[in-house]
Length: 292
Image (cartoon, rainbow, N blue to C red; front, side):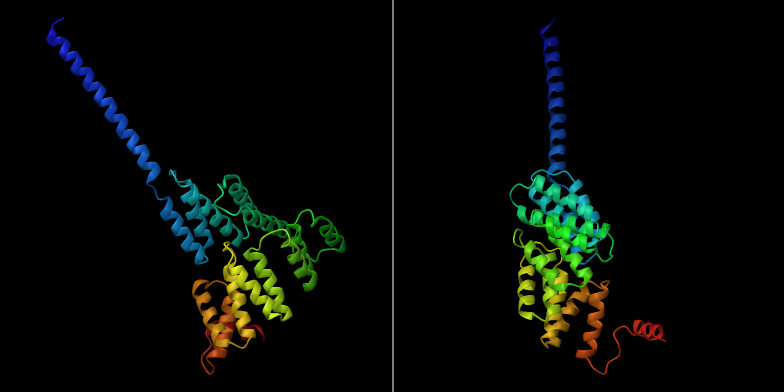
Protein backbone atom coordinates (compact mmCIF):
# COMPACT_ATOMS: atom_id res chain seq x y z
CA UNK A 1 0.00 0.00 0.00
CA UNK A 2 1.37 3.42 -0.94
CA UNK A 3 2.40 6.01 1.61
CA UNK A 4 -0.30 8.32 0.19
CA UNK A 5 -3.04 5.73 0.82
CA UNK A 6 -1.82 5.28 4.41
CA UNK A 7 -2.05 9.01 5.01
CA UNK A 8 -5.62 9.06 3.60
CA UNK A 9 -6.66 6.23 5.89
CA UNK A 10 -5.14 7.95 8.92
CA UNK A 11 -6.84 11.22 8.02
CA UNK A 12 -10.22 9.54 7.61
CA UNK A 13 -9.80 7.85 10.98
CA UNK A 14 -8.82 11.13 12.60
CA UNK A 15 -11.83 12.84 11.05
CA UNK A 16 -14.13 10.08 12.32
CA UNK A 17 -12.56 10.24 15.77
CA UNK A 18 -12.88 14.02 15.84
CA UNK A 19 -16.53 13.76 14.78
CA UNK A 20 -17.29 11.21 17.51
CA UNK A 21 -15.56 13.34 20.16
CA UNK A 22 -17.37 16.46 18.96
CA UNK A 23 -20.77 14.74 19.01
CA UNK A 24 -20.03 13.33 22.49
CA UNK A 25 -19.01 16.77 23.73
CA UNK A 26 -22.17 18.34 22.30
CA UNK A 27 -24.28 15.59 23.89
CA UNK A 28 -22.59 16.08 27.25
CA UNK A 29 -23.04 19.85 26.99
CA UNK A 30 -26.74 19.43 26.24
CA UNK A 31 -27.09 16.99 29.15
CA UNK A 32 -25.15 19.32 31.47
CA UNK A 33 -27.15 22.38 30.51
CA UNK A 34 -30.45 20.53 30.86
CA UNK A 35 -29.50 19.62 34.42
CA UNK A 36 -28.15 23.01 35.43
CA UNK A 37 -30.47 25.40 33.58
CA UNK A 38 -34.20 24.78 33.89
CA UNK A 39 -37.47 26.40 34.85
CA UNK A 40 -37.28 24.82 38.30
CA UNK A 41 -36.62 28.03 40.22
CA UNK A 42 -39.06 30.20 38.25
CA UNK A 43 -41.82 27.60 38.76
CA UNK A 44 -41.04 27.50 42.47
CA UNK A 45 -41.10 31.31 42.75
CA UNK A 46 -44.43 31.42 40.91
CA UNK A 47 -45.82 28.81 43.30
CA UNK A 48 -44.72 30.80 46.37
CA UNK A 49 -46.39 33.92 44.98
CA UNK A 50 -49.62 31.99 44.37
CA UNK A 51 -49.44 30.43 47.85
CA UNK A 52 -48.98 33.80 49.53
CA UNK A 53 -51.98 35.11 47.59
CA UNK A 54 -54.15 32.21 48.70
CA UNK A 55 -54.33 30.59 45.23
CA UNK A 56 -53.46 27.13 46.49
CA UNK A 57 -54.55 25.09 43.45
CA UNK A 58 -52.31 27.14 41.16
CA UNK A 59 -49.53 27.01 43.76
CA UNK A 60 -49.67 23.19 43.77
CA UNK A 61 -49.44 23.10 39.97
CA UNK A 62 -46.35 25.36 39.99
CA UNK A 63 -44.65 23.43 42.79
CA UNK A 64 -45.24 20.11 41.06
CA UNK A 65 -43.78 21.47 37.81
CA UNK A 66 -40.73 22.69 39.71
CA UNK A 67 -40.18 19.29 41.35
CA UNK A 68 -40.55 17.53 37.98
CA UNK A 69 -37.69 19.57 36.47
CA UNK A 70 -34.35 17.76 36.68
CA UNK A 71 -31.51 19.97 37.82
CA UNK A 72 -28.24 19.29 39.58
CA UNK A 73 -27.45 20.83 42.95
CA UNK A 74 -31.12 21.50 43.68
CA UNK A 75 -31.65 19.33 46.78
CA UNK A 76 -32.17 22.26 49.16
CA UNK A 77 -34.53 23.98 46.71
CA UNK A 78 -36.57 20.81 46.23
CA UNK A 79 -36.92 20.32 49.99
CA UNK A 80 -38.24 23.86 50.39
CA UNK A 81 -40.55 23.45 47.39
CA UNK A 82 -41.98 20.21 48.79
CA UNK A 83 -42.56 21.92 52.13
CA UNK A 84 -44.61 24.58 50.34
CA UNK A 85 -46.43 21.85 48.40
CA UNK A 86 -47.44 20.18 51.67
CA UNK A 87 -48.67 23.51 53.05
CA UNK A 88 -50.78 24.06 49.93
CA UNK A 89 -52.38 20.62 50.31
CA UNK A 90 -53.19 21.45 53.94
CA UNK A 91 -54.93 24.69 53.02
CA UNK A 92 -57.12 22.79 50.55
CA UNK A 93 -57.82 20.15 53.22
CA UNK A 94 -56.09 17.49 51.12
CA UNK A 95 -54.60 16.06 54.26
CA UNK A 96 -53.52 12.66 52.96
CA UNK A 97 -51.55 14.32 50.16
CA UNK A 98 -49.92 16.55 52.78
CA UNK A 99 -48.99 13.51 54.87
CA UNK A 100 -47.28 11.93 51.86
CA UNK A 101 -45.31 15.16 51.30
CA UNK A 102 -44.11 15.26 54.90
CA UNK A 103 -43.07 11.61 54.78
CA UNK A 104 -41.08 12.30 51.62
CA UNK A 105 -39.48 15.32 53.32
CA UNK A 106 -38.34 13.21 56.27
CA UNK A 107 -36.94 10.63 53.88
CA UNK A 108 -35.00 13.18 51.78
CA UNK A 109 -34.05 15.65 54.53
CA UNK A 110 -30.33 16.37 54.34
CA UNK A 111 -30.30 18.07 57.72
CA UNK A 112 -31.22 21.51 56.40
CA UNK A 113 -34.78 21.24 57.72
CA UNK A 114 -35.99 20.85 61.30
CA UNK A 115 -37.12 17.23 61.39
CA UNK A 116 -39.16 17.75 64.57
CA UNK A 117 -41.14 20.48 62.83
CA UNK A 118 -41.73 18.24 59.81
CA UNK A 119 -42.94 15.49 62.14
CA UNK A 120 -45.28 17.85 63.98
CA UNK A 121 -46.77 19.02 60.68
CA UNK A 122 -47.17 15.43 59.50
CA UNK A 123 -48.94 14.53 62.73
CA UNK A 124 -51.20 17.55 62.39
CA UNK A 125 -52.09 16.49 58.83
CA UNK A 126 -52.79 12.94 59.99
CA UNK A 127 -54.98 14.21 62.82
CA UNK A 128 -56.88 16.53 60.47
CA UNK A 129 -57.38 13.69 57.99
CA UNK A 130 -58.81 11.47 60.73
CA UNK A 131 -61.08 14.29 61.93
CA UNK A 132 -62.33 14.98 58.40
CA UNK A 133 -62.89 11.30 57.63
CA UNK A 134 -64.65 10.78 60.96
CA UNK A 135 -67.33 13.38 60.23
CA UNK A 136 -68.31 16.50 62.13
CA UNK A 137 -70.71 14.93 64.63
CA UNK A 138 -70.33 15.24 68.39
CA UNK A 139 -67.95 12.48 69.56
CA UNK A 140 -69.05 9.97 72.16
CA UNK A 141 -67.62 9.88 75.67
CA UNK A 142 -66.03 6.52 74.80
CA UNK A 143 -64.20 8.08 71.83
CA UNK A 144 -62.81 10.79 74.08
CA UNK A 145 -61.75 8.27 76.75
CA UNK A 146 -59.96 6.23 74.08
CA UNK A 147 -58.11 9.30 72.75
CA UNK A 148 -57.13 10.26 76.30
CA UNK A 149 -55.62 6.81 76.84
CA UNK A 150 -53.66 6.71 73.57
CA UNK A 151 -52.50 10.32 73.29
CA UNK A 152 -49.56 10.15 75.78
CA UNK A 153 -47.86 7.55 73.56
CA UNK A 154 -49.10 9.00 70.25
CA UNK A 155 -48.96 12.79 70.69
CA UNK A 156 -50.73 13.64 67.43
CA UNK A 157 -53.90 12.23 69.01
CA UNK A 158 -53.93 15.26 71.30
CA UNK A 159 -54.87 17.25 68.18
CA UNK A 160 -57.80 14.92 67.54
CA UNK A 161 -58.70 15.14 71.21
CA UNK A 162 -58.71 18.94 71.05
CA UNK A 163 -61.05 18.81 68.05
CA UNK A 164 -63.32 16.35 69.87
CA UNK A 165 -63.55 18.63 72.90
CA UNK A 166 -64.27 21.64 70.67
CA UNK A 167 -67.15 19.79 69.06
CA UNK A 168 -68.53 19.02 72.53
CA UNK A 169 -68.19 22.68 73.49
CA UNK A 170 -65.55 21.97 76.14
CA UNK A 171 -63.11 24.74 75.18
CA UNK A 172 -61.03 24.49 78.35
CA UNK A 173 -60.26 20.79 77.79
CA UNK A 174 -59.53 21.46 74.11
CA UNK A 175 -56.98 24.09 75.12
CA UNK A 176 -55.36 21.71 77.60
CA UNK A 177 -55.06 18.99 74.94
CA UNK A 178 -53.17 21.40 72.69
CA UNK A 179 -50.87 22.38 75.58
CA UNK A 180 -50.20 18.69 76.23
CA UNK A 181 -49.27 18.24 72.57
CA UNK A 182 -46.62 20.93 72.93
CA UNK A 183 -44.99 18.97 75.78
CA UNK A 184 -43.37 16.73 73.15
CA UNK A 185 -43.62 18.66 69.87
CA UNK A 186 -42.50 22.13 68.68
CA UNK A 187 -45.03 24.87 68.09
CA UNK A 188 -46.39 25.19 64.56
CA UNK A 189 -48.76 27.76 63.11
CA UNK A 190 -51.78 25.43 63.33
CA UNK A 191 -51.41 24.85 67.07
CA UNK A 192 -50.56 28.53 67.62
CA UNK A 193 -53.75 29.52 65.80
CA UNK A 194 -55.95 27.05 67.68
CA UNK A 195 -54.47 27.95 71.08
CA UNK A 196 -54.58 31.70 70.49
CA UNK A 197 -58.23 31.33 69.40
CA UNK A 198 -59.00 29.51 72.66
CA UNK A 199 -57.35 32.28 74.70
CA UNK A 200 -59.24 34.95 72.76
CA UNK A 201 -62.53 33.21 73.54
CA UNK A 202 -61.55 33.15 77.21
CA UNK A 203 -60.64 36.83 77.10
CA UNK A 204 -57.04 36.04 78.06
CA UNK A 205 -55.50 38.58 75.69
CA UNK A 206 -51.99 38.36 77.15
CA UNK A 207 -51.66 34.63 76.45
CA UNK A 208 -53.38 35.04 73.09
CA UNK A 209 -50.83 37.67 72.06
CA UNK A 210 -47.98 35.46 73.29
CA UNK A 211 -49.17 32.54 71.13
CA UNK A 212 -49.79 34.75 68.09
CA UNK A 213 -46.29 36.24 68.27
CA UNK A 214 -44.65 32.85 68.77
CA UNK A 215 -46.67 31.38 65.92
CA UNK A 216 -45.74 34.18 63.53
CA UNK A 217 -42.08 33.61 64.44
CA UNK A 218 -42.31 29.92 63.42
CA UNK A 219 -40.49 28.81 60.28
CA UNK A 220 -43.76 27.14 59.29
CA UNK A 221 -45.94 29.61 57.32
CA UNK A 222 -48.93 27.35 56.73
CA UNK A 223 -51.49 29.26 58.80
CA UNK A 224 -49.84 32.66 59.22
CA UNK A 225 -52.85 34.40 57.64
CA UNK A 226 -55.11 32.96 60.35
CA UNK A 227 -52.68 34.12 63.03
CA UNK A 228 -52.64 37.58 61.46
CA UNK A 229 -56.45 37.52 61.57
CA UNK A 230 -56.36 36.62 65.26
CA UNK A 231 -53.92 39.48 65.81
CA UNK A 232 -56.45 41.85 64.23
CA UNK A 233 -59.20 40.46 66.49
CA UNK A 234 -56.90 40.98 69.47
CA UNK A 235 -56.35 44.62 68.51
CA UNK A 236 -60.10 45.08 68.17
CA UNK A 237 -60.70 43.54 71.60
CA UNK A 238 -58.11 45.93 73.02
CA UNK A 239 -60.03 48.85 71.53
CA UNK A 240 -57.54 49.63 68.77
CA UNK A 241 -60.04 49.72 65.92
CA UNK A 242 -57.74 51.64 63.58
CA UNK A 243 -54.91 49.12 64.03
CA UNK A 244 -57.30 46.19 63.61
CA UNK A 245 -58.78 47.71 60.46
CA UNK A 246 -55.35 48.38 58.91
CA UNK A 247 -54.32 44.77 59.48
CA UNK A 248 -57.59 43.44 58.08
CA UNK A 249 -57.31 45.74 55.09
CA UNK A 250 -53.95 44.15 54.26
CA UNK A 251 -55.36 40.64 54.72
CA UNK A 252 -58.47 41.46 52.69
CA UNK A 253 -56.32 42.65 49.77
CA UNK A 254 -54.48 39.32 49.81
CA UNK A 255 -57.36 36.96 50.58
CA UNK A 256 -60.44 38.43 48.89
CA UNK A 257 -62.18 35.05 48.85
CA UNK A 258 -61.82 34.46 52.60
CA UNK A 259 -65.34 35.00 53.96
CA UNK A 260 -64.25 35.35 57.59
CA UNK A 261 -61.71 38.06 56.79
CA UNK A 262 -64.15 39.84 54.44
CA UNK A 263 -66.96 39.84 56.99
CA UNK A 264 -64.74 41.25 59.75
CA UNK A 265 -63.23 43.79 57.36
CA UNK A 266 -66.69 45.01 56.33
CA UNK A 267 -67.77 45.26 59.97
CA UNK A 268 -64.73 47.26 61.03
CA UNK A 269 -65.01 49.49 57.97
CA UNK A 270 -68.36 50.76 59.24
CA UNK A 271 -66.89 51.26 62.72
CA UNK A 272 -63.84 53.18 61.51
CA UNK A 273 -65.73 55.06 58.77
CA UNK A 274 -69.16 55.85 60.25
CA UNK A 275 -71.90 57.40 58.13
CA UNK A 276 -70.57 55.83 54.94
CA UNK A 277 -72.12 53.49 52.42
CA UNK A 278 -71.71 49.77 53.20
CA UNK A 279 -68.61 48.15 51.73
CA UNK A 280 -70.62 45.38 50.09
CA UNK A 281 -74.11 46.87 49.63
CA UNK A 282 -75.24 44.01 47.42
CA UNK A 283 -74.41 41.44 50.09
CA UNK A 284 -76.09 43.59 52.76
CA UNK A 285 -79.23 43.76 50.67
CA UNK A 286 -79.25 40.00 50.30
CA UNK A 287 -78.88 39.58 54.06
CA UNK A 288 -81.78 41.99 54.69
CA UNK A 289 -83.99 40.08 52.27
CA UNK A 290 -83.03 36.74 53.76
CA UNK A 291 -84.38 37.86 57.12
CA UNK A 292 -87.82 38.77 55.78
